[in-house]
Length: 72
Image 1: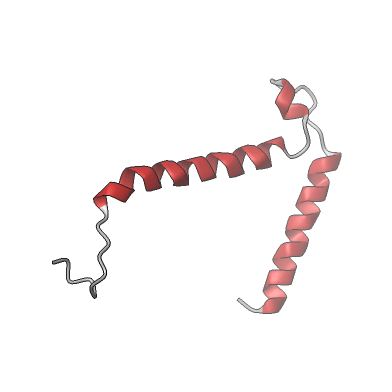
Image 2 (image 1 turned 45 degrees about the vertical axis):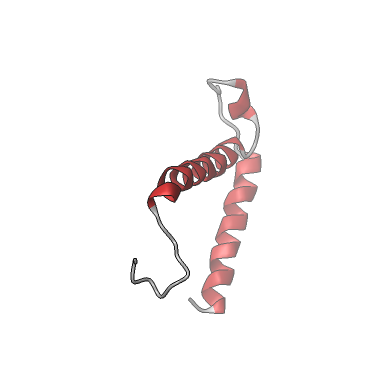
């Protein structure tokens, strides 16, 4: 991707993050939903937790050796 595309994507992300501060839920189901950025943080932390869990489960199955990958 070119530098111009990254700048456009960053501007869109900044606009959406700014809109998240202005638009609040009418009737949040839980108290945490009323906090601006809750769903973004929830998604980020959930994704990180899934990555850590997958690494912990798959780590013992993957054998890394110092050779050129011949598996012996």
